Length: 307
Image (cartoon, rainbow, N blue to C red; front, side, top):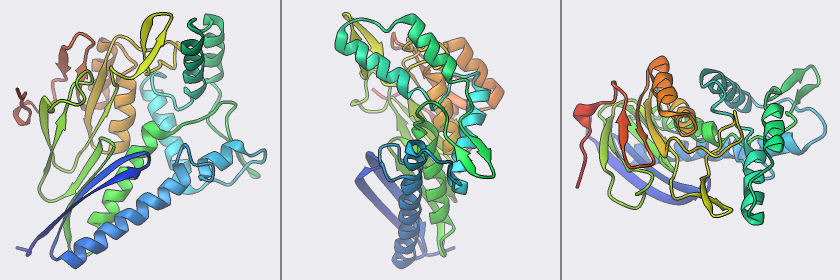
């Protein structure tokens, strides 16, 4: 059995949020090398995929007038986004940026967006994310924010870089609530109801080579003409989601958990449970009234509600 060094660290302002990590290794030196490899991967992918950095490849591609030959990583994330748009029936779509802007404008003017304008923007989202040719790849006629799949993708790649480092037996990384474990052993994560994000987590779940991601936040949103609207927008209708307060998904990788949790926050409860059944993922779905529904495959024996 290996001598073991268990290294933990926490950082702020990583991709606009926090990063926590844990690495199990034979020695401190090997743990330090694994952390360096993890950080190198986070920084490399952030330079490609960051939604708010004008110099990221994603934003240079979208702001330019000429087609570009995209990196394999950006192509991977675009392909993942297309996949999850398809499997969720359009409830996941990285092009909802303009719809969010319309609701921000509505909050400022105290008048809901014109339904015909919302419908027109939803129709534009049917155009493909990218059109490729020998000259390169052109962006779509709408703005993309790939965060709801790219953050999970970065977590997956970062923890893989760490666990493949010499002498490492296991690792996990958590970026803003998107968590992935790889290797021996396990890690335990807490899940809180979106209406009580500052409270102690009501549920604990153990991950063994799995990923966990959450979406939805009942306290985030916009007040329009005296009514509170969620920040989550259903790309199919352009309306703010109301049926579900949020969701946490346990999946084989963080990119999947990330995208599916986003979709579950836009779907109705019945649609969400059916999606989880088809995709064979476990989930907790939080309803606005405080109720919680768990899928049949949620690991109940590893989950407990705390006081």
